[in-house]
Amino acid sequence: MTSAPELTVVQVLVSDPRVRPLLRELGDEYSRRYGRDAHAEISRYPDEEFTAPHGGVLLLLLERGEPVAGGAFRRYDAATAELKRIWTHSAHRRRGLARRVVAELEREAAGRGYRRVYLTTGPRQPEARGLYLATGYTPLFDTEADPETIGPLPFEKYLGKHLGEAPKQ
Image 1 (tube, one colour):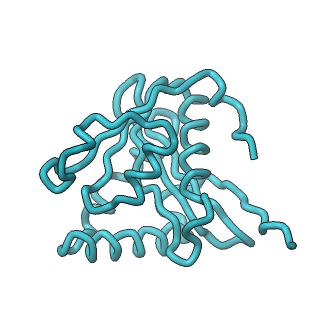
Image 2 (tube, rainbow, N blue to C red; image 1 turned 180 degrees about the horizontal axis):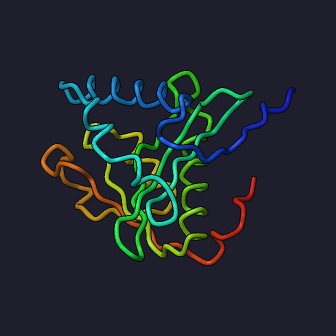
């Protein structure tokens, strides 16, 4: 049995060329799931919203130097970070990478003084819904309702003191 390749976490700007392939694939997938071009939605937030000190951060998970997953947060309000664009490249799914991205973003948000995380996901993204439920997020919607009748599915999570530490492997 061989060990898993080492993953490196890097903070980058939205303009970093390593971000483009992930956002392009994310836009393509959203377009397929929702039946309309979603690429404009992907780029609707200004880059400054994902930069420190008040904006947030964009993280990439690199495997052998190549981006395999990523995500970002931006300031939602003084106490709340909003997670955006959690994504795993289609060739690297089912490995727990999105869970790792979420944990890294939570840790970084807590380190910057945020006490709460807020996010929304689309009604046609059951994998994302499952991820957030499995990682301790509280749904702010009726989980028994048809997701298509709700629209964006909001979640929240309060950050504990332990998040200032590196996640356990």
